Image (cartoon, rainbow, N blue to C red):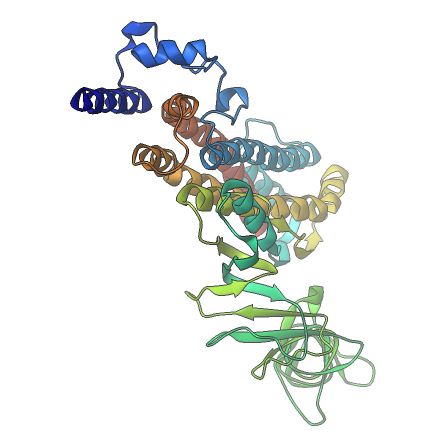
Length: 433
């Protein structure tokens, strides 16, 4: 009697595992044979008729970690399509401004108009947009996915610059440098200044902006007193006013923002502080990260979705840019009007492109993790880990069948986003960014 009972339990387990992987005998009415019939009587969707990702439904398996992963795929589709639409809107606006046909090569058409209407082409001074990933978004996504995860003990790492709270004791850890940003009007600066830098008495320095004072070299513009008030090809003695509020090394008084390294970790009085490791170093981070993040330790499928959610929620600030040009005598009024809008168009385009890079990375991570994320959960339950019941078994069967749709959705949205980024790249190349 005991042997028969054991044999019956073994057969039930075998049938269940076959149903899990979609290999069961469907002779019992389409959906796992005898188990399928029992499940149907319990109101369980054994034939996956509730729909999946293509229908915007992430509640496929009944397992929180797997369904959270599916939700991230749906979120990626929305994020990719949204940022692609933003890029295309700016491209359409540029085409309309310059009278470029929709099927024309926008980069080549712009360059042709610049050559025809400008003397010496177009010069763009440009600082890329700053994109930051919210560390808390990664922690929250992990907590929603993994019931066993403790947000209080979460450690998220940042590959890049991590913003931290400015204080008298900024702890960035070993082999990581703390940087402090101070706000003017006048700061003794021994780092990078964004604004204008008044050089120390009798000091001379290279100046990438406008040199006011003495110029040991060639000055592009001299005032009535014989002092330099332009570009100094050499060393400047006096003050250096930086163009576009760009950052440049300043050994003197900075009127603006000064970013300095703090070997002792003291950033008291600073408006912001950050920790940044070497090129390949990961910094433990609790604020926001300028770079990619490594989510806290959790289930594999939860780490994949948490990293993707953090990337998709990255925020990008507009870039700093200024356009210099000289119109030719034959420049048309329509071209002049279009050119006056170009800085606004380029700023919005560059911001969207910055966001697009993070969204594209999220799609690549989700695609690479999809099979392992879903089948890992299947294997865990088949091995006796977690709650095992008919609803979960058949839900995971539907989840395994959804993997092709996952890859298709990511590929389609990613392809559309890639095409938009490529067209935007043609524009930025044409203007010299």
